[in-house]
Each structure stands twice: as C-alpha cells, then as structure tokens.
Image (cartoon, rainbow, N blue to C red; front, side, top):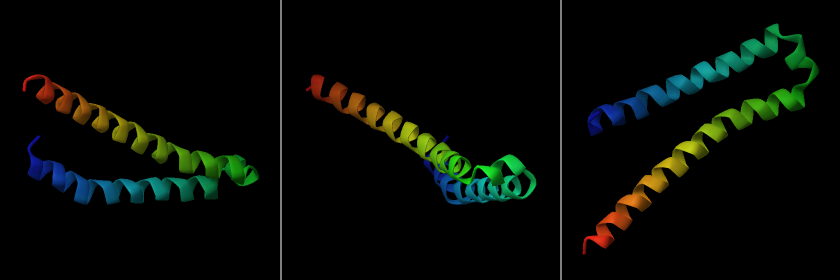
Length: 76
C-alpha cells in the first residue's frame, strides 16, 4: 500500500468507521434493553473498544519505529 492510499484510508475510512461505530452504539441503545439497563458498563465498553484498538496500533507502530532505529544505529 503506497502512502497516498494510506492517507486516503486515514482521511476517508477513519471518519466513516467512526460514524458506523457511533450508529451501532445508538442502535444498541435503542433496541437492546440490556444496554439501557446497564448504561455505565455499556458506556465503558463503548469507550474502551476503540481506545484499546488505538493503543495497540500506537504500540505496534512505536515498536516498529524503535526496531528500525536500532537497526540503523547498529549499522553505523
């Protein structure tokens, strides 16, 4: 995947994914009595799922950059 398609995915795909995720959350609140009965738990899950995904992506990218930096230093 080249940098232009990665950028397009970031600019177009990320907001659309967020919109779908929010729509899913609203639909669950409307149609699921369990979600309405336990708003604190369902709200925490709704918050923690994208946070966990973002943290895993961030850590994976940081580890990749660190390994790349270490391999460049060892060659010098």
